[in-house]
Image 1 (tube, one colour):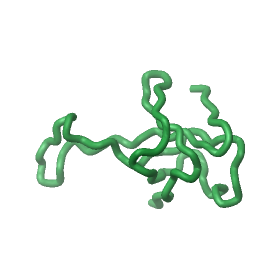
Image 2 (cartoon, helix red, strand yellow):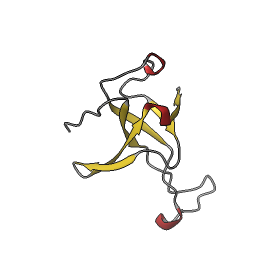
Image 3 (tube, one colour):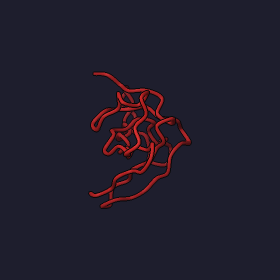
Amino acid sequence: MNFKPLGKRVLVERLEEETKTSSGIIIPDNAKEKPLMGVIKAIGGKVSEECQCLKEGDTVVFGKYKGSEIKIDNKEFIVLDFEDILGIMSK
C-alpha cells in the first residue's frame, strides 16, 4: 500500500464489528452499523501541535458521518481530518 494522506488527514482502517452479541445471538450483516473505531495506517504531512500525539498503529474513535471511504488493495479505509478524530483508545 502506497497511500500518503495530504495536509491534516489520516488514513484509518476500521475495526471489525462483532458478529455475535454477548448472549450468543448472531447479528445479520444488514443490521450491523459500521464501527466508529479504527487503526491509523498513515498520517499526513501537516501535523499541528495538538495532533502530535497521534501515531501510526493508534486505535482511534471518530465521528459517525465523517471522512471519505476509499478502497486500496481490496481493503476498505477511511480518510479523516485530524479534527474528526474524537480520541485515542488506550490499552
